[in-house]
Image (cartoon, rainbow, N blue to C red; front, side):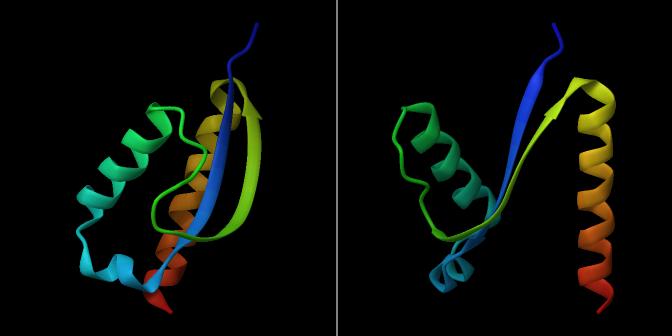
Length: 74
């Protein structure tokens, strides 16, 4: 059976700019690890996708990197 992975892209609230990325990542991870159904700092869910197998996951990550590079140059 192939491994399925879900990827969720969210936009964070404006106040998140006052915290470091590491702090926000830790808070989100801890909240979801405890089974809480809320994501700290969430403003809006932008996209959700499910991928299957390593190739699909690799393609998804490459697309994210391309998107980030495009954003940083525009």
